[in-house]
Length: 127
Image 1 (cartoon, rainbow, N blue to C red):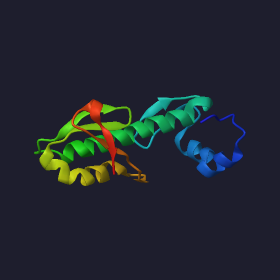
Image 2 (image 1 turned 135 degrees about the vertical axis):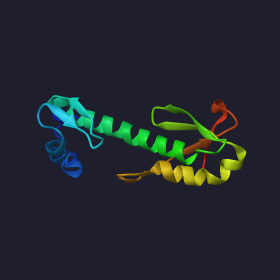
Image 3 (image 1 turned 60 degrees about the vertical axis):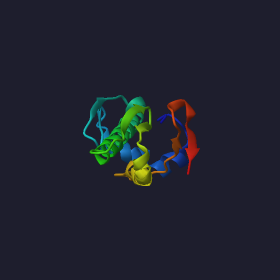
Image 4 (image 1 turned 180 degrees about the horizontal axis):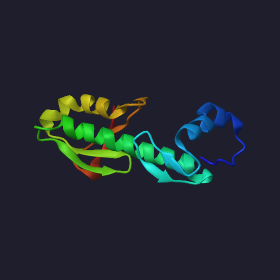
């Protein structure tokens, strides 16, 4: 996110100038989720990425919460970029659907890793 970096290849691939032109007016960043954040040139891209990433995550966590309405399973907690579910055995059959909900963002499908276990400390990666 360093605007002073001399890595022109990355800047071109990620179109950082175009993105900043669209979302930063020299004073504030306006995110796709309608947040307005004071930012100088050095921090504008970072704030845009971090805020948007957080909002995408919260949007998907809420979608999971909504999908679990009326079931015994529920969103237990959110930790950084992880949604922790307390999932009832009878709802294991919808786990793939839950993963699909989380991975399907307004920016496309994201790769998602899943861990499961009888307790939070006992979780292992599942495929």
